[in-house]
Image 1 (cartoon, rainbow over the protein chains, first blue to last red):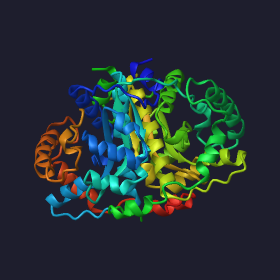
Image 2 (image 1 turned 90 degrees about the vertical axis):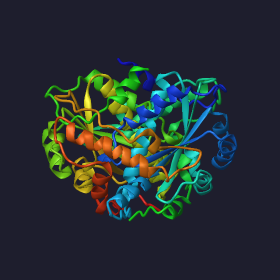
Image 3 (image 1 turned 60 degrees about the vertical axis):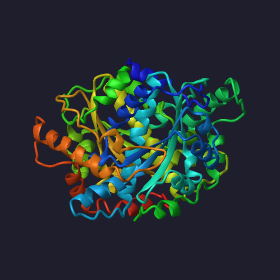
Image 4 (image 1 turned 180 degrees about the horizontal axis):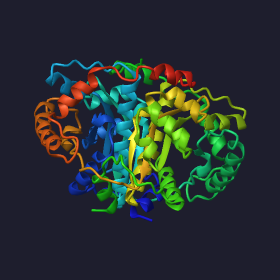
Length: 244
Length: 244
């Protein structure tokens, strides 16, 4: 197979980093690789905030409830961004009204695509990283801290750095449990999830840190039981995104 | 740099393919590479429909208003999927109520991350591909055609195949126009977008096919002027996603 495939299939979230930062020329290539990702109708509806200010990083770590942010040599906030398109419209006397779910989805998808290239490109150079959904725990103060205007909101953070430790690769769902041929098939879940639960039960018991006695369906059932981040709708609308 | 970085920085959308399909063992590694992507709290909230049935492909091409679908040797529909998690919950007597924007966002992000790995892995083996946002043109009949249950909806399609032709790489926004250091900076857009408009104007005039006289801000202004896919909100809710 290819180096790329090897990199992807050995992805693990890295949460502990050495102090040394990623050299500037590597960062540049990593971010440019991000930009290589496809973007819906070429709108490029994203912005990346590189947070290098120690005080801001610590404050964001506190707000996101995630201490890894403080320790990562490089921390980024990936934002859905329709602001730049507004500026583009204004140059041509056109008022862009971003008032539907389609634009909201496009901005999120575009942002996720660029981010996935960024982390994979970093991994291909030996760095490690971890997405931080926790920026959605307190998106409003975090947005204010980095001065996000209306039409821009943070989707997730990304820590990158030189790995100080690496976990084992976590087994994914059997491919058959996510892949359907021509027709979606709910029937097969019962047996495939049983099979996967056994795999994950063994994994959780045997992994080198944070052992536990559970399986996938059990941990998902408890995780999904409660509504999470119920403030998101109001927050997103407060940033000028309308979900009609 | 790395092979991965080279692959990403030379990404182009490929829309014409040779008839030969991607060998099964390659497809397997490509899809497994997709699964390597990070997933929010390990929910793996996605499904992929591999559409191999010629009649279905043609029908989807018509509904998505995109003929490339018919011609691609391999066509996939990437779906946000909370159904499998519902099944997981039921195994443990827990009713999962997916009724907020956070879960909707998580499912979209998860799906975009896996898709971006899939296309990049394919490209690393010499294949080419193209995202098809057009599945959102008629998401309801397309969903019915491949039997998507409630809690599952199509986000985009992906064509893959052996490239019959390759376009030039399209210049992206200057990195400075998407990257902000510690603080979002709207001020810099005016001059950076002028610079980019010049780059894109030259690109559109000189590229080998589909030459035109325009630039980025102008084409964006006209593209974003009108509301698009206004049915998305109602459709998404009809699939049991609540955006509260």
